[in-house]
Amino acid sequence: MTRRRETVLTGATPQGEPVVLRPLRRGDRRAFLDLRSRNASWLSPWDPTVPPGGRPRRDLGRDFSGYVRALAREARSGTGLSLVIVVGGEIVGMVSASGIVEGALRSGSLGYWVGREAAGRWIAPTAVAMLGDHLMDPKGRALHRIQLEIIPDNTASLAVAAKLGMRDEGTRRSYLHIGGSWRDHRSFAVVAEEVGRGGLMARLSHEYQQSQTRHTE
Image (cartoon, rainbow, N blue to C red; front, side):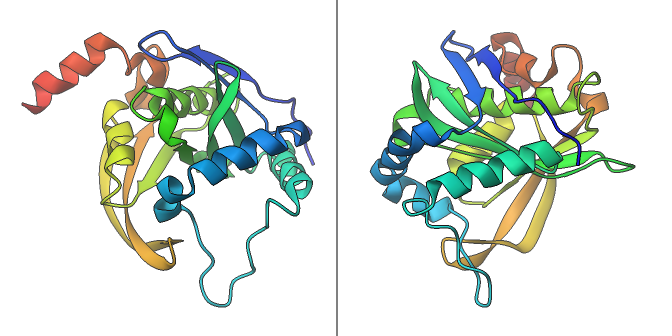
């Protein structure tokens, strides 16, 4: 197994709000669980659930340390990377890469969640862009493709894909078990040749957003 150094990423929203992405730690237990509890009704419609016959999900309240260790193992193995989103010294959400494959495919799927208090502040698209740029860095993991899978009625997540200028690749039927049932997902992707100078973070600039508006009017 290849050991990888702990990943900590820093950036800022287009409005200049600093954003830090770092691994979840055992000392985050109270803050993390409080954030999830406060936002239970906000997050539950989009949370992964266990289909019939599947293994029960980990109870974070009972085994938070086990969850932290599992995320660390994923990061060390290179198959996944989950980082909490920290703004103003407080955890406001999490962004994750799963199913990372190297070899001829070199791809990964990104997902995220943020608390209600972080919504509308460009924190989510900034976090996704930061992690995507890290994974696609030619001097790092050098992934060729990253993708997002989004439930068609999740308007907030659709807005994230739009802000990042990701290409809509169509609908995947009954793709993931979310909120207690199998749900269709729209798939959005970007490959390295499409990203251009400045990476995904550059796509959050005012100039890029204005350009996208003109091209879609």
